[in-house]
Image (cartoon, rainbow over all chains, first blue to last red):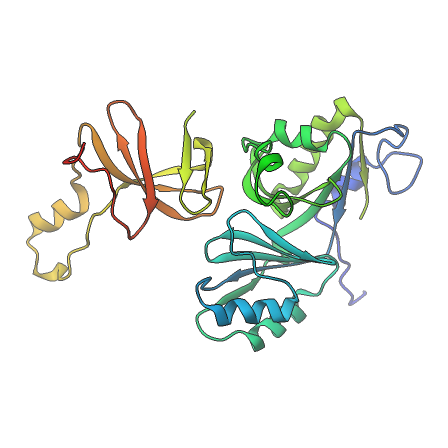
Length: 211
Length: 96
């Protein structure tokens, strides 16, 4: 018996059930001209941060550790390379590092932050999905009650994030400079959301890539 | 469907994202042990159930997950203002 634990993406069974294409690692790959391409970023570090936004020492300490500005304006986020910090509420943020180690980030932040704060590793509870392609914006609009058109005219236009409904689940949706969108979804809803995306994206042509 | 302005998210969002939290500005008695059963019962269970202007709590459940207060006309269902918990409404029954 092996002592090692095999890490499985939250979409492991989803990929297994649907991956019947000839090309390994992509679904429905016979459609080359896809309006929607979905790719998961598995095993990323997700941390929930709580603290006082009015405390400048707290804001500066977070910024120093992550090398990112703590977003204080509602509905915005900051990104640096693979690390993002999303505004979730007036005293709550989500830190996501693609391919990062949550334990390392948590330890570093605990050392740097003083006072009444909370930092919780939620990596096991959620995952991040990137949606790109010409139909990505249309698909978001038909999946959610949020007015994504408001982002086109909003200030600032870049770096927008929103927690809202997505199909019958919820998601943290953010835009990226390249025109694609990131969804942070719950582990328990991951399979449902992935199937929803396939179904909703079918009319545009849809492909799933394994992260 | 209503569009409700969340004072934390600073934008109008769909009613679907919110849940109702009951009457606002109910102050917990400072010395509950000094109250009679009737006074304690009034505090726990009795609400104004006003017709017209009503101050109530709403919870932005799918958004920022924060409570805030709203002033709503219970006759027309019109939400006249929303404001953060801990602040006072600008529209009251006396001013309307």
